[in-house]
Length: 351
Image 1 (tube, helix red, strand yellow):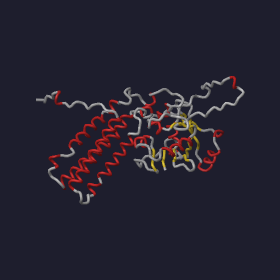
Image 2 (image 1 turned 45 degrees about the vertical axis):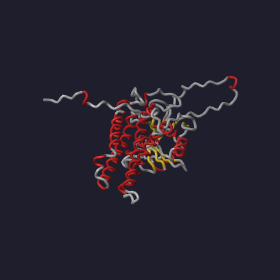
Image 3 (image 1 turned 60 degrees about the vertical axis):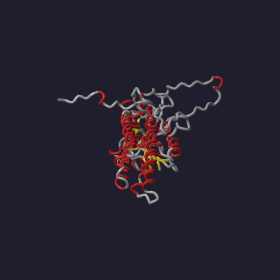
Image 4 (image 1 turned 30 degrees about the vertical axis):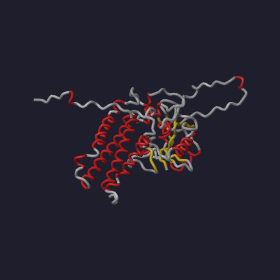
């Protein structure tokens, strides 16, 4: 006879939570774990030397604390505008931290139970924290389903229409794994002197990636069939004295909406028609790291007219400290040439 499951036996679903709340709650639990660990050390070990098997836990917990504090600097209200399914992505990183907290709690209690006090197995000093982490993991697991920062579940490219001064839909598409860009051969008359020198030295050709949503285009050099697109080209851009290297793909991901030529309207005061009017260069690039931290795109501060200006800004503002791990991974940012996965290639290298 099949067992009958009563409604009362089914645990209620976890209460909804935001990413910000989850981070704060995990930080609070980390403080409790570290405090309880120190209490156990003071009671069972002090004044003797603390064995490394015990003392090594606090540095690990501090690393988790630093990760959470770094994630807390992001604006989870703005992330949906550049990262599709941003709550689910954030939940992945938070769940990793929660899992390591679980492992630490289990390891600490096992050491003290095995070597200092068998009665701790019954008293279970970490049981309340263990249960709290378990419940928090269930709440974090719901982030990808509920999308509290983006209830309409829109893709990043659909969060707002293309408009001047904002990231282009084409940039958001390629940042989120959808590339509808067009490729064309760069004519000889459009080559710069630097381009010509590179062709003379290395051969190959220059291609351009054309955004499908605006008039932005970026050129890149290819020299073999294995490096014949914007994802695989081995061309590296750098500017003398700057602690950063990057590839053209990062520029494509960072570009702002540029209207087709001839579609912009300029209003000029006829009384000043004989005077010289300085029209500022159009903004072409935005800093995804500034935007992710909640800053608007502002000329000279987080929005720029040239690749070099963007690179100078990132080298100055985002190397100490580096962006949170979530941003490093999503935008393929290496630190001194190292990525989380050695098989991947970087689009930005912070030196």
